Image (cartoon, rainbow, N blue to C red; front, side):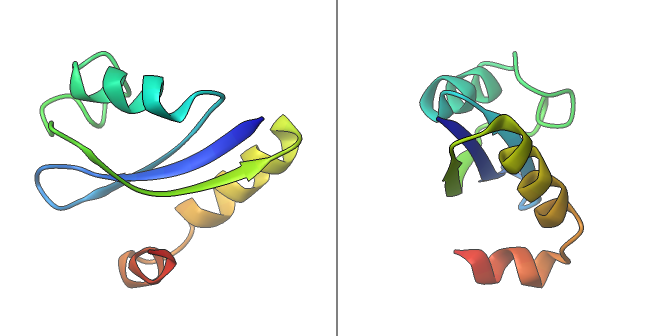
Length: 77
């Protein structure tokens, strides 16, 4: 399975990403080994996930979510 996820950073901002293992990826973010954006904004809290059968579908949805405003992202969860 392929997943799109949204985490809330310690500064209240949201980060959207793609992974095949959500728990591992969130742990990487918390350890400072995740995306450059989340480093220094730890700890992060998982707010939302969606699962997909294909990587391309997940990546398309990740792009869609990244285009949403903050309030539209908050409506997801």
